[in-house]
Amino acid sequence: MEWQLYSFVVRSKQRKAIILALRTPMTPTEIGHKTDIRPSHVSRTLSEFKEKGLVTCLTPEAKIGRVYELTKAGKEVLAELESKS
Image (cartoon, rainbow, N blue to C red; front, side, top):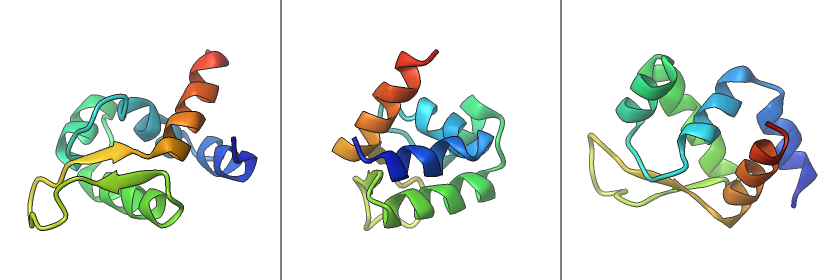
């Protein structure tokens, strides 16, 4: 577990909600519907997550409807968040 990544996620309600929503691969629009967060905020957060190695894009060639999933590091953060619920 990288505690710096965990700390990065829990400092924001939006980041926490988005990582909790990503239990299964989904698009930014689907995440937005599930979390009630605007798609632009979801996309920006996913970009931050990608830079930090928390998510990977499964369909990078797609212009619309890209599918994201958690990396091993992202799954570790998710597991830690779920253990505290």
